[in-house]
Length: 258
Image (tube, rainbow, N blue to C red; front, side, top):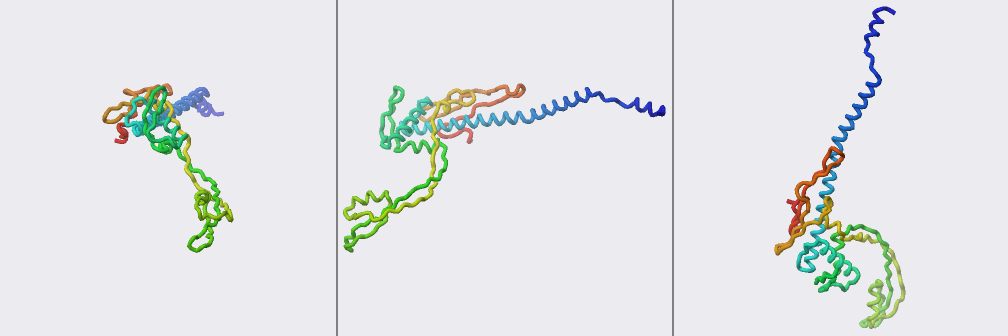
């Protein structure tokens, strides 16, 4: 081998394996840091938005509770638990007894409440709070073929009536007898409501778990989030979850709609 070639080989730089590994680790670490800086803040923003939406949802639930309470008592209730208990008790009573409406005296937890209950109040409760869903039901219709005396023509007429009208027709003096019965099936889509219960959590803010602040006076009511100032919470060591008051509802007017 010539002297020039030997000198050229000796001058070629030699990369150490440990240095290459170190550079790879540094590149990987920087990549992870970059992903964290981009991804984690967006996750925290989503959490902040979810908490804010849940807080406002609970205020809207309490707003409907106050409106129902006022409808039945002609006043507003600053204690959210009492308001929910009264509305829930009336809901349960109207569901259990169709005659439970009008002026009623409700006794609850040692207290007496004079309420004016709308008929079938539970239907208003369900359509306001509960989640609805559609369901296809198979209905069977029964049709009766009956005879009825025609006083003008002095003969028996033949009528086809559904089962719900057949019993009423039997009380008619001109009613004759059943001469045939037919059944048919039909599919009907009905709306149902999943059970909904006003629990204590709906009276609390989802972030600090304190009761919503409800004030009442001669001008109406106000429901306010209990968070004061700015709320901060450390997340993932280097990031911060921040939030402030979620707003308020005053006499059915939402602050976040302005």
